Length: 125
Image (cartoon, helix red, strand yellow):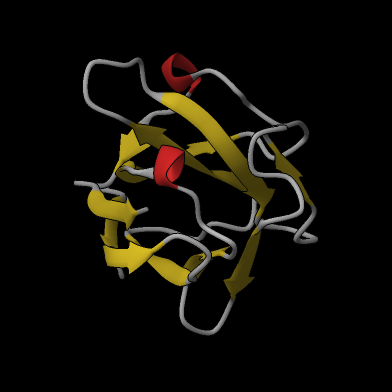
């Protein structure tokens, strides 16, 4: 059974940085895609970015491109979301998600099979 555990959320001032972690366990993830999503109060859960475990290529939503970076540590089975130049509109619960099928990216939450519990990120102005 795949398990995803996020950590690293918190309160930060606008312009600051945070790094979220998603520790994955339960199987070999070489063929998986790991995605990051976020959900602000009263809004739909939206795609932030994704990484193909094999090769490490990434894709990002336009709203975070140039500010957020996704990476992975194979030895630790962990994916990271480095968030720089944070803005108040980045405030949300951040989730990591996973699915098999690394030949393409997946942008829709319904396409992911496994989810973490989420971690709160609050950016003050």
